Figure 1 (spheres, rainbow, N blue to C red):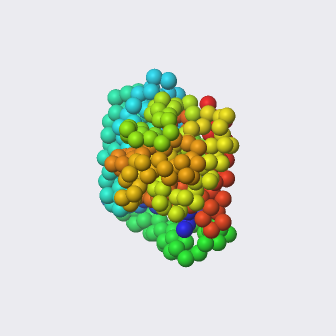
Figure 2 (cartoon, rainbow, N blue to C red):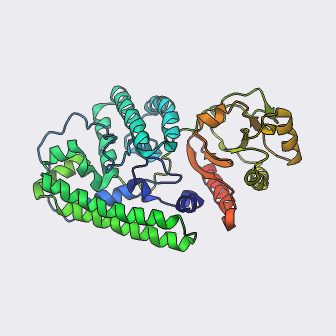
Figure 3 (tube, helix red, strand yellow):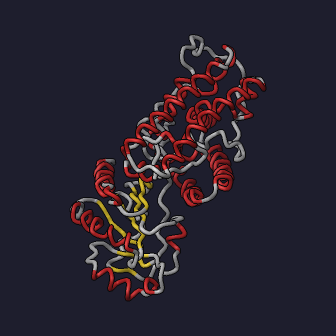
Amino acid sequence: MFESYLRANGLKAKLFFLFLSVSTLSSDASLSYGYVGSLLLLQQDASQSKSSGAALPPLWQPVDSANLRVTQTLLPLIHAAEVQTELGLSADQVKALEASLAEIDGPWWRARNLPIPEQRKVVADLEARLLQQLSIQLPDEIVRRIQQLELQLQTSRLLLRPDVAKFLELTPPQIAEIDSMISDTEKVSSEIEKLSQTNKDPAIFEKAQQRLTEARKIEIQDSQDTLKPAQRQKLTQVLGTLFDFSKCERIYPLAPELVSSAEWFGTNPGTLSELRGKVVVVHFYAFQCINCQRNFGRYNEWADQFKNEDVVLIGIQTPETSAESDPLQVRRAAEKDAMKFPVLIDLERKNWDAWGNTMWPTVYVIDKQGYIRMWWQGELNWEGAKTDQVVAAAIKKLLQEK
């Protein structure tokens, strides 16, 4: 329920939960807390502009998948257009980066469904793979800056990275104290997660978010207080110039390419690659699913609302029953429901698997560059929710992007 509330807030919600859990992909998230957290970690240190003179390691190692305290942040941040601008990437460098992401993003996206330990192992392997490719594609100073941004997003959690702790010369008592502080935050997070299972009041969720934010701030401030002046100086060298992540909204993978099918209702609009430059809304459904049926009217409303805009709606009908496995019945049902958009009939569930989809219905919104920007599982108007309006607002916003 908590995640459903957060998904319903779409691009409006700034979920700092990316930094409060070990999960690398939430249904809605942003990088907004990284700058604030890093700033708190370095606050009131008059010496922070000085260099410690200690040589940094050639490269930091990817986060150990077993180190559950430290969030894996490399993949979300490297997708942000603002980060790519900060790095000064040329058009050719962005193209090379996206070629790497095209191979990495599918496994990353599907890993969101795995149990946390397995998910972290997959992500750790992908981070190592990406870092290796970046080291070949980009100058050393850019790769170093990427790693500084990665560490900034980890805020106080970076202090529990063995490589960073060694460089800062943290003592075992310091590490134990920081670990205890993080445990206090995790307890608050667990309590709120339990609350979310039984409570449906959005106001409660707002208060929970505030409570968790405060707990996170206390964790960061107290962690900073454990550091000695010399360690703080080294930390400024580790983090580099602080970057404001608050406007970074593109943190999800490139959308998986559609797996071609000989069976369509309506005209095949082409591949997602061919649809670059347009906002694409993809929704998975099964025509006998009652929850799916309750969304059909909203999809048609979007089709009417954006018919003169660069927006493409695509339905993907993945069968759950034997009737839904019959292309003729799928087409007849689509005609009966007067669907105003093409439908890919996913008889072999290849698209379902490629997207790592788990629920009928699910809606994905894809920007002009082909990146997933938000998604929603279930009925759009479940128990009074207005997610159809949230999606429409997201589409409008993405239409304004270049």
